[in-house]
Image (cartoon, rainbow, N blue to C red; front, side):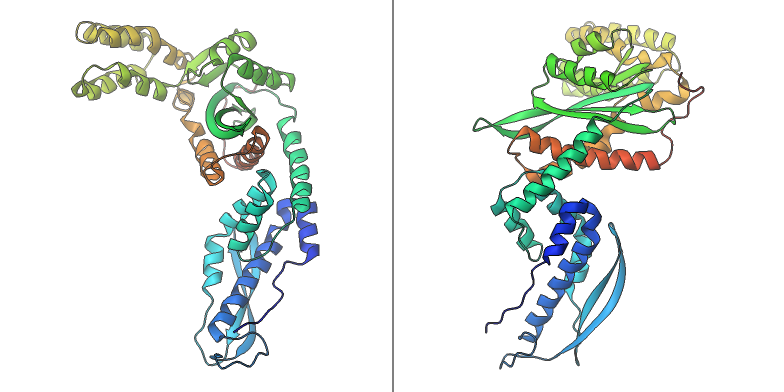
Length: 389
């Protein structure tokens, strides 16, 4: 049995996608899921429209509109009907569940710079149409312009500055290497978090961090009273060079993990973790210092390397005591960036390997830009006792 039908996406819709970006997603989702449902009905009937075949198992009976809420807004789909049958397309439910995956697939096409072959495979898997390399190129260029404008937007007063880094696999000079993705998040005058910038480069060397931090200052970042981060390679020297007079809070969560590497016996790990938590949870700096001194003495004989490490490193996690008690839970670690990194990881896992740093930067920027906008429309993260000046 063979029959052919035109299930391609109209050229004007593709042009709309190129010109409007993700604003055109609702129409594209509607067309693609409608197409999938038509194909499913034909498979169920065993024949195409107006086709006479021995395999036909029934007859089409038009369409019934159904409006459903999706992540890209309310969309009215055309549900194919079949005479004298309880047929209901599974494509609709599957399409709604996977419409976020569809958005990601489209994002891959626009922001990863993937090959035409991979674009075709993605779109065919999502029910059916191919996008030419020229269309992908146009959309990518437009998106690059938007993302760059966002990365270079003016900044303002941010009392708290969170810095973090993660790694993504990128192909460079024919080899797969780990590129460092640097992230900066601030808490603005309204008490809301805002992703300030993102940068991608090979390694976390000081020059990468320094250039990144200098770019934030050049865009108007001011009023920073505390920097919260882990002890990333190269960050310390860059931070001193750019924000030399700003106090540093080393992430307490990372300090807890780092300490376990110096515990000589597994049976001691729970006790060590509990003792460190007690130091971090002290009501004030004086009691924290006293507890730290006591803890160092406790392990000096049985675990001298651990004791030395504690004495040298744990004070870097106590800077938070100089700030308002109501803020401490939110500024003593970089855990507030977990959702950010989780979303980045979820998207980049699909890509697996980026063809270059630019494609990695596109996708990461698109993700953090979306999350930053959500933060801006959400609740306050921190309430200030006084306004930034």
